[in-house]
Length: 306
Image (cartoon, rainbow, N blue to C red; front, side, top):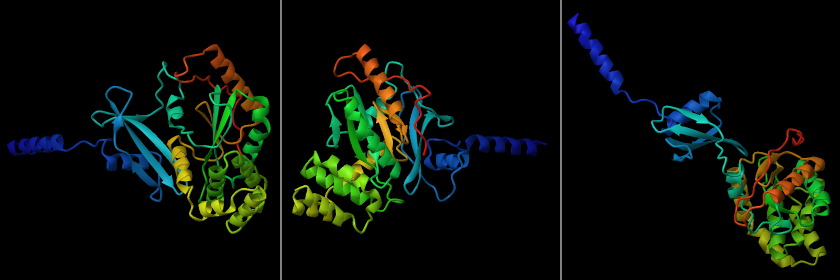
């Protein structure tokens, strides 16, 4: 009996000394998430380092699951002891609900249309070989500035889906070479790539682009050097990284004052949303350096799924 008691005590001590699993351990969290979702072995999982959370007593850990161009990011709030974690969007009633994405949407040195300082900012992530992007771009080009000559500014950011669109990246590089040489000409080239989309291939893109550049009277040698050396590719890569940072998983994806809308948004729905943004910000004017505010998107304003 005495021996049995000693064995039980020893087993209890060993169990007490055994390290507990922690979600702050990368391997442990990866294994848990793979089982939770579930993610098969071919999906790459990257677990980030813990960072400060807005919630007292918690750390924030980002987990990126990816396969080729497709990805999904999880943001977990993990307790200090690593024993509990949850996935949720945390809002602060004193801040714009889209403040986090607004801060990540870098628009410096991006092609733009409209008025600087306009109350509504649109940021479009697009792919020149994407048929849905062509549709969205046509809607914006045909309607936006006619309806809102001073109230809206549109920024274009490249998001080529390399795995399925072989000439999207070269097209983005070419468009940025045009932008470097003559900023207003970017939009003409943008329209050309979308209008003639079905005629382009990875093999003929350079030839057709050169013909367009020549016809517009731009510097052919400058464009050729820029395109051949892929001088603007780092700009394209930065846009792709920015897109991933705000969870862009498909094209087109449009941000309206920070609100993400994936898919083709029909003009009546977009116009109504812009009108709401203009009215709301006019009624709730704040100092110039204050973060902009936004209204909740009514259920009727749902992007058309393609």
